[in-house]
Image (cartoon, rainbow, N blue to C red; front, side, top):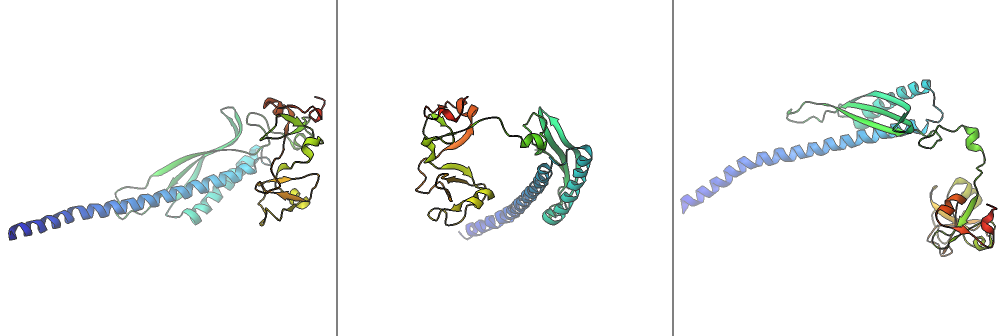
Length: 264
């Protein structure tokens, strides 16, 4: 019996000696894999954020010289943000930068490859740092549909010849003109902008805190003065505006009372 007990204790000691180092190595490896994933996520955020910055300014920078300038700006911004936000010995450079090209039938494409080297400082140098590569593709805000040339300011400011009509999106089969008696008593769905807040005040019942710009709100043109959110008890049915051709394509027909607000 004494021999058996000593043998069992010896088994436990041997098992611990074998498996504990393996467990610790696996745990440390997992920790560094998580660390590497976090670094990759920061790199993805920084590179896409800087690409977004370039794309939002594409309309005013549409010539070749501006393209070269944006490439220099992008490189400077990336290096600064890599040093401040990514760190861990990461180096980066931009290759194959292309500005406002047409690709796969889509105009205004901005694309570049980001090459970077990341050192996560593993305690055991089993692997050497490798150069990683990401291709990023954006579309510049050039004031054009995906397959068309960009509009100039004069063309964008021209009054659209299409006719705007109003429909009940949740109920109803007709489209109405702006002054139709059927829609005057119902609120209209609009996007909250500075112009809306200058003209209307928030409802004291449903907007205890002001909604952020870009939110969907509802206004009564006839009553005016106040905008509401969708949960307000005053908003039971509402109307939205759309192009008359869109309304027809969705199956709406002209209101018999107002004729759809047009002679079309």
